[in-house]
Length: 271
Ligand SMILES: O=C(O)CCC(=O)C(=O)O
Ligand SMILES: [Fe+2]
Image (cartoon, rainbow, N blue to C red):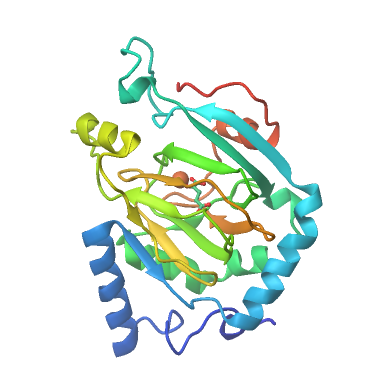
């Protein structure tokens, strides 16, 4: 399994030939999905044989994963002191999951090799419409796995960058849905009323239709999202997350790195 075609269904998703008619159509339909619902979910992106091999690679590493378990503000990039207790800026939600980072993965293994295909980076660049896009150079968080077991959840939050790529390697038998409120915030308008309605359940979020093998590009800086609690399940929920940046040589801030690499139960209340 060496070629891009061994990893990705190029007949359905011709990311190796984006200048072709089929390639242009793919980019346009993905951009349409992003514009409307802040998510581009491509089912059957990973080939079934590869999917089995990559989730086996991850399952073998599960005994070495770190466990993360702390309450966190959805507004991690802001200072959140001084709001009333019921305000969205005062709320915290549990982040409880297993994490594997690039330093724990085989550099020749399938997870890292998939990240390194330039065709995949170019596909993401075109979807985002950026002039340039580079794989994050972070030796740890550029490639990350979320591994969730019964009782785990990844509470409501925003990402600190737009354009996170995730690949669903394995889904849980019960729970673990990816729920989101598309484009609910912007840099000018936080929309706290609607955010509060999502938190209380008055407003129902969207659910991603993303079985194992799905590629997801998501506007997580503007879209509130969570992974709902995992219910009864013999297998873990596994997602593979790739980080990119518009500048070469991107490293994550030390605070974020520390949270992933040296987990503690200390609440994360923001900057
Ligand atoms: O595991 C997932 O599907 C996404 C988790 C997430 O939102 C994140 O890591 O920021
Ligand atoms: Fe996220």
